Length: 382
Ligand SMILES: [Zn+2]
Image 1 (spheres, helix red, strand yellow):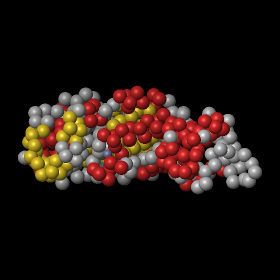
Image 2 (cartoon, rainbow, N blue to C red):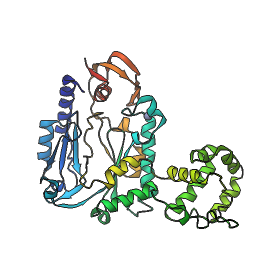
Image 3 (cartoon, rainbow, N blue to C red):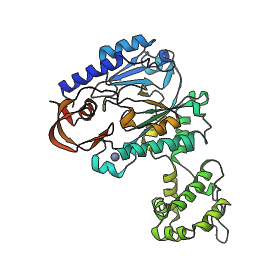
Image 4 (cartoon, protein in one colour):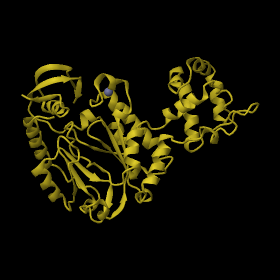
């Protein structure tokens, strides 16, 4: 729980931020449902609608909500209830990637609710992979239809605004998610004579489209990176060493579709590992948002995240994502230092400075760092 004094203080900063903010209207604002959260729940109120930026701003300044969300769907009557009364017209395709789904090693040290630089780089790499290796080449979405937002905390939201997918229902969205997660891939499709004695193992070439090409390029990439990459794909260390030693031959083979030299004893483990390494790893959150909920509410881009005080910043496309550093570029609540009482906190790196770790400590901190710790529920106003 956040204390009353911390909550009141942060809300006053949020209100001031929106009073001076640029126009934050989303596309087709009048057809979107708005939802707002408090410090306890990300969505406490929903079914709101706003037709103009001045009206939305007036609400934000008066109420200073710590979380602001909009529907990915467009409706005839966004404030209609129950949901069926809204008149659903379609929805953006959304992918929500969260570092806490990546099961990173650092998470066991700092806990799932904390986020460190390793978490942020890993989730950025997964987001790049999703766009660069799946959405653009395999689904043919144009770069211009893809818009990427920092979530404001531990991940990224990828919005696809494409007329072809706009009307898709849950089942079709599930099929897209399954493809990206490599769910239900039958390897015999790519290796037709797998397990047939006396026959050369034919398989996909790196130039093939879809999953075949991905598998070929993925295995070649692992062979070039070293034994560890092969072991990470589920290969036994002994086999990995052997294969790595004769990699030049193996790679030439795969390039021509001849997989005979990739003779691994524990086939099932290896192929399962290879598919997992090449697919996008955030399968939990991809499922939750893409497939099951066409009435989903998602953070309004360029608004403040109430668990960090950072901006859920729109970074544009792939180029913008590459240049974006969350703990530098999403810091917007700045001001005079304040004194806070910190219970226990891992290291915080923000705006190029390191703070902590702390254990029962009173500190005067720059405003942005103090807010971050208060909203992460590890510190309080003194
Ligand atoms: Zn981490």
